[in-house]
Figure 1 (spheres, rainbow, N blue to C red):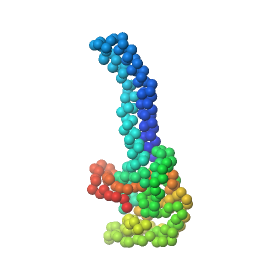
Figure 2: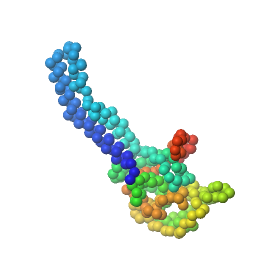
Figure 3: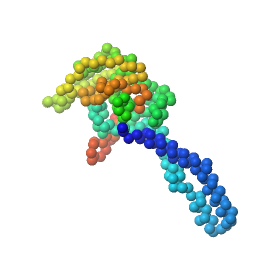
Figure 4: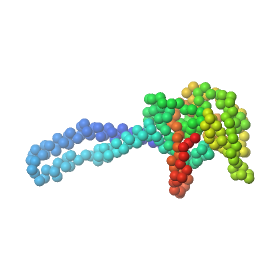
Length: 271
């Protein structure tokens, strides 16, 4: 199981907020009342008044930290849960569209607003469409995956001879290049799904037996653009509606693994 940052962020926001609220309602009035008692005993002109009352009015350290951190945590929680969230690409399953080390931005409201941690949808906005790149939690692993939407509920998907068919219609593929040029390991094609073009990789040494699927209601068929090196719906099933995280919209930074500096030279929109 991966590090559950949304849960930790939500708990930290709730705890710091509760501490701030409890201090405002119960503890702060008591501190002020105690300081007022001292002020009435010493008199308003006493030279020791400030030095005596200041410790009584001072917030406990946990309250001080909670008041400082709560606004920041709350803003981050709202932005991350309902607007945009950054992710880093850990594998090569979406090559050549996304590279290992790409930092992407995910639009969290594109497919509807969801409660953090619980994932319950509270507002419908739009639904995933074929050809879009989506972040989701797969059925077999509690982790974030990113793949391309190939089939929406009701679609019939066929994959044969490394050609993709959606509802009986072959999705056009145009040869672009072979890598490396002399003894190719990969073939690069431009594929069009719903008239939107993107690049895919095919491994020349790996075959693909013909398979067919009919996408159930509330499910989505997902595939990686690195077609022969992608763990996707062909192997573990469908992405569920309730496990959608958001739509991947852009690459804003890249950092190669290891000791290397990040670069912003290849920032781009995700197609």
